[in-house]
Length: 256
Ligand SMILES: Nc1ncnc2c1ncn2[C@@H]1O[C@H](COP(=O)(O)OP(=O)(O)OP(=O)(O)O)[C@@H](O)[C@H]1O
Ligand SMILES: [Mg+2]
Image (cartoon, rainbow, N blue to C red):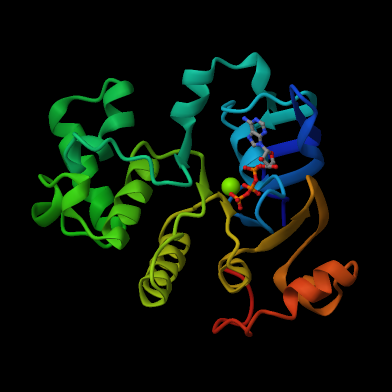
């Protein structure tokens, strides 16, 4: 079996903000094609900072970031972002645009014709479990929280990106809706060759959805490995303590 291509790579990546805040101390990780890697860790541990380095929304102050083998600091940010789907922590939908227009954003930037954009938006909404005819002409504030998250996911997927960066995509939702969206995500993983970097502080979610999990604390990655390995062989007391709070996931091993 050949090793899958590496899509995302960080080598000793760090970010110091002026004034001495070390948002990310040092992080090294790889995400392979078709893999979902979850970043978990407490608030302020550097998850969002690391995630946003891959689409150059945060520039590292040390280390290197590569996308498909190429240094991202040598790539044009806009061109890079067209190849990387992104669901920001707050969803990031444009409030005065309809659902369809939001989802068509990147295909439009890529110059797709109107009819092509329309059918792509409909297909993508369908993929995330929404009825295009029902929600396409609504505005984000006319949707439930769960529907908005689905639209944000659809928008990130609409341009057939090589990888998606998901920052707590199911955050701020009730438990039932989260479970439903987890199921939807698993279906996406099965139906598309999804490559994803998923930030979550829901450990159960990370263990259920990810092929590998990276545990972060204070700007560093403490341990990276498949869910079972992390559960059975936590690297230290902190990881063990963190995992002691997780119920066993309903699906025994990652996404595969
Ligand atoms: N623009 C900034 N300027 C200064 N400090 C920042 C900036 N952005 C983030 N930080 C700090 O860097 C640290 C890491 O932030 P980050 O957003 O990466 O955490 P996180 O793990 O995503 O947390 P959460 O789970 O709350 O979203 C925090 O201490 C944060 O206050
Ligand atoms: Mg964050």
